[in-house]
Length: 67
Image 1 (cartoon, helix red, strand yellow):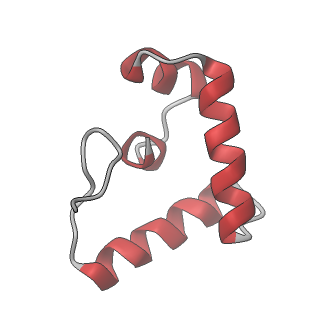
Image 2 (cartoon, helix red, strand yellow; image 1 turned 135 degrees about the vertical axis):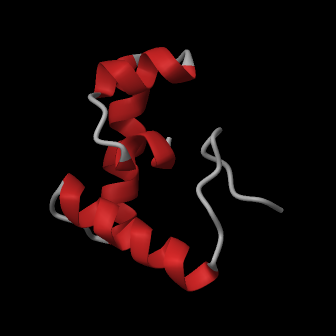
């Protein structure tokens, strides 16, 4: 979901691509914003991009990080 979020897709588009409900996308986005203490989606995306840069890990297509 993070990769799709960073592409600027709308909730409905993200939900369709992930085959989940739009409500689920909204809940996940809300939880991410709360945990990261982000006050806007652009702020959250910026934080996620900085984390990716720091770890050197590319975004995963399914939204999961490598284990």
